[in-house]
Length: 107
Image (tube, rainbow, N blue to C red; front, side, top):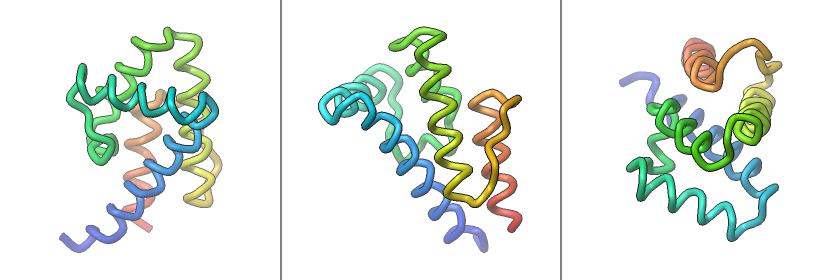
C-alpha cells in the first residue's frame, strides 16, 4: 500500500488530537473514557481513523449531544490544525474524519 506511511501519520495526528482534547477533562477521566469505549464499543484507539462512527457514538453516549459536540469540534480543529488546514464547520464528526483522510492521503 503506497499510502501506508501517510495513513500512519494521519492516524498519529488523530490520536494526538483526541488525546489533547480529552486531556481537558483530566488524565484519569481520559483513561476512563478510553477504557469505556474499548469495553463497550470494542474500539481500540488505533482503529478510530477507520471507525469514527463507533468512536463518536460512544462519546455521545457518555457526554450527551451538547458535551459531545464540544469535544467533537475540538478534536476536528486540532486534527485539521496539525494537517495545516482549517477545520470544516459544517461537517459531522464522521464526515470531517473521512474528509481529512481523503485530503491527507491525496496530498
